[in-house]
Every structure is written in structure tokens, then in C-alpha cells.
Amino acid sequence: MDTVTPMRDQEPGPGHPERRLSTKEAAELLGVKPETVYAYVSRGQLSSRRTPGGRGSTFDAEEVQTLARRNRREAGGTPGSGAELSVRTRVTLIDQDRYYYRGVDAVELATRHSYEEVAEWLWTGRLRPGAAFTAPEASVEAARRVVEALPEHSGPMDRLRVAAVAAAAADPLRFDLSEEAVLGTARILIPTLVAALPTKRPARRDEGPLARRLWTRLSGRPPHEAQLRVLDTALGLLVDHDLAASTLAVRVAASARAHAYAAVSAGLGVIEGPLHGAAGGLAHRMLLEVLDTGSAAPVVAEELRAGRRIPGLGHRLYPGEDPRARALFALLEEIPEAGPALAAARDIEATTARHTPLHANVDLALAVLTASCGMESSASETIFAIARTAGWIAHALEEYGERPLRMRPSGHYVGPKPPRPLPEPLPQP
Image 1 (tube, rainbow, N blue to C red):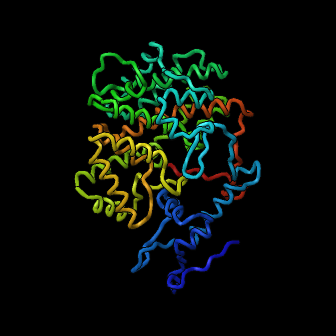
Image 2: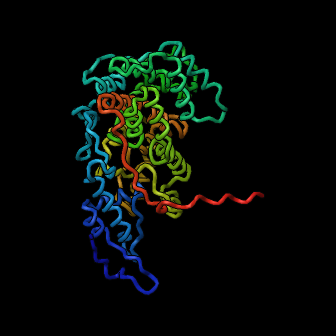
Image 3: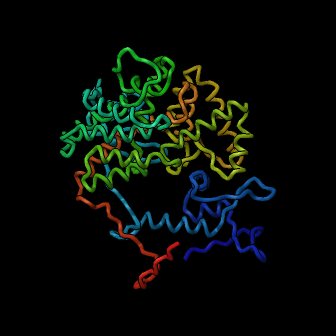
């Protein structure tokens, strides 16, 4: 059993059984760098407390030990126990603050090629210059009809989910899980999802690169090429990111041999969580508040006072900089309209660094894009969902080639020991 000696000035006294660890001690127990400890805090996996009169933070020893045990189980669970879920994949590798699509640097690929070309590379391992996705009118019309029937207050994720279902219903060949058929589905489904979203401004023709078509659903302003390039690059950067929660849901669905539309629907259902696809919207709203206030300090202070983590900062897979954020910030610096939002983002990062040394992640970069281009706070979630659909298809294709129903961990029952007597019926009122 792991034991850690608490700091002397944090020895438990009468009525205070809690043991506190320094950042260094917590890092040693977890086997990570101190920066990663703060990343755990930013993701809500650890809680911290400021050292009285000092600049450091302390951590509850029992909480740290629990996280350490969980990390060890995830790293080395026994086969078939369900303690570990390790999935072989050729899609994405994350290593040393960089990530790769099929072995190719993802940032270089996304900054040099369109979203459609990146998607084709991810699916087939071949680069198709000028790749373009179009959808048949029947698929688009079916999706638009159900989207238009939704209540007025429905959000973009509501629309995308029902659009995916409608597109599936319009495709009688959806149960064909051959690679060729699934790729055909992907090239139809992605533009169908975009076309089903209501436009913010009329367009003469709903065609061209997917990023341009998506722009008209996100902003009422006419775009210039630099803005479209940022949006297109963001789509390429977000195509995949290893086994994120939504991607795992997709693979579980594909393991049960759900068709591609259903697998994507599983991902869309998970992505709406505030710790996943919706995180960019939280960063967007915070960014607007900083711009309105004129300083990040009071906004960050209020977030911390309320016990909330600062959105848009830190990532548990990147102890250093999030390469996706770095790439987007570099492109946003070339857009004059993004200047104020960029300055606000830097203010947030610098202000928070006084408390925890965390770098901006892709959610904050997306917030700068959406806030500076006149988009709503939900726009980053839409971008995320459309982009990630291509990655979900890549993972579904891999899973179709594996043994069916292998995504079946065993439950660890911790309820009352059976057998128990039948429960007494509740008295009638």
C-alpha cells in the first residue's frame, strides 16, 4: 500500500484528520510532473488549496492516493477484468505534446490541407487533393424537414442529432458495413449535417469547401479568406484526438455492429457534456465577460471563488502547450478583428498562471475564433461535432474489423449481498 508522509505544517490535529501534500509530493505519488498535477486540477480530477501565506497549493493525500490507484489500474488492469480498456488503433498517436494522424504530424497536415483532405487521409491513408463532400438532395431534404420541425429554442446539437437520424432513415443501404459503403456514408453524412443547420446569412449557392458552407451556419458576417482558413484548420485539427469519451462511445456502438449513422449518433450524444464538446462555449462566454469587464482578474477570481475550474486552460494529455491551440493562435494573430479577443485570452492565461501554471487549450483558441467572428457561444460545439464526425467514422471502420461485441467490460457489483427478500409494496395513499 502506498504511503506518503504529509508536510509538517499540515499535520492533522484534533478534529482535523485531513492530510495535505505539497505539489512535489503529489507529483511523486502520481508519478507525473508538477505541471500534470495542476492539469488534473483543471480537469476536475483533483482539488487544491492555497498554502496559507505561500504561493503553492496543497492537495488532500487520500484524494491523491485514490487517483494514483485509479491511474495504475487503467495502466495495468488484468485482461478481461474491465479495469483497463486498451484499444489498438492506427488513427491517432499523442506523444510529447504533439499528435499524429496515421503517423503524420496532425498540425502540419491540418495547416496545409483542407478538412476534407485530412478526413480522407484519416479514413484511407491516402491524400486526395481537392477532395470535396457533397450530399444528395434526398438526404439533405430529409434532414432539413426534421430540423425545421424542432422547437425554436433547440440548439445546434439537437439539430445535428436529429439530422443524423433522418439521414439514416433516408438511406436504405445503411446496414452495409463494408469499407466502401461506410466511406460513402461518411462523404454524404458530413455535408448533410452542415446543410441541415439553419443559415445565419443567405448564400447564393450552398457549395464550395465545407468550411465555407459551415461559416454561413455560424456567422452572419461575410467571411474573408484568413477567417475561412482558421475555420478550415480548426476542423482539421479537431478531426480526432485518440479515445476521447465520444470516440469510445462510437467504438462501443460499432462493436455491436451499429451502422455508421448510429455510431455517429452515439458520439453526438456524448459530445454535449460540459467537459467535452461544450467546453468551448464556456470559454467563449468567459472571454466575452473579460472583454466586457476590461480585465481577466475579476472574472477569474469569481470563477475560483465559485469553485469552478477556469475553462479553456490545461489538458491532461499535454503537460505543456496544446499543439492545436498553438496552431490556431498563430493563424488568429493574422486577423485584425481577433486582436481584442486574443489579448483577453492571454490575460486569462497570465492571470490564472499566478494560481496554477496551465497553458491555453484548444477550447480557448476556439473561443477567440467564435467571439471575434460574431458567432454564438454554441458555435465551437458545432465546429467540434462536425470535425470529429470524420474521426468517429475512422474509428468505426477500425472497430468493424475487430471481433464483435468486444467492448464488454465486466461490472464490479458493490450492492447489497443477495439473496434479499422481496421488497414490501409501498402503502397506497
